[in-house]
Length: 143
Image (cartoon, rainbow, N blue to C red; front, side):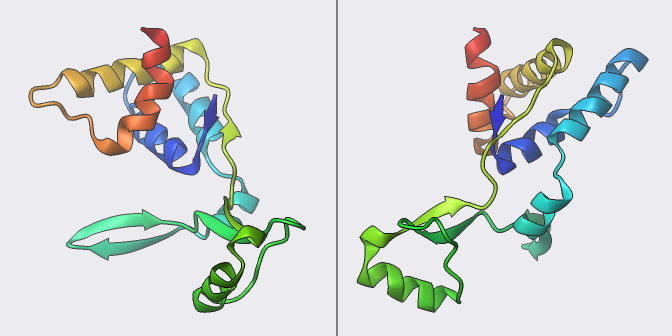
């Protein structure tokens, strides 16, 4: 299943830390599959920032490239903005890390679906906007 950086983080957060031995082994493999390679970590530049007393994980999501060559445009935001304003047809923003095809087995997929449905069925619902695309990818195809 193709998952973005955000979706990989959301799915990792949905995986339980307690279960039976067999499922825990499968969940460990799933976490490894969802985690980021050393190269992805360098490109994404993960860091945390406290906002209103909450610690948020941030990362570099996209970068500017020249359409003709596909080369990354270096420089600060101001310089890049001037280039795009001058010739918007020559540039585009692309994800630093594309969606990755993550192989999750049936058991782990069903655990994720069950967790998402439990969040949705809670009173009041605990499903959040951050779950939206993950819900669409996991729950909707199974209904």
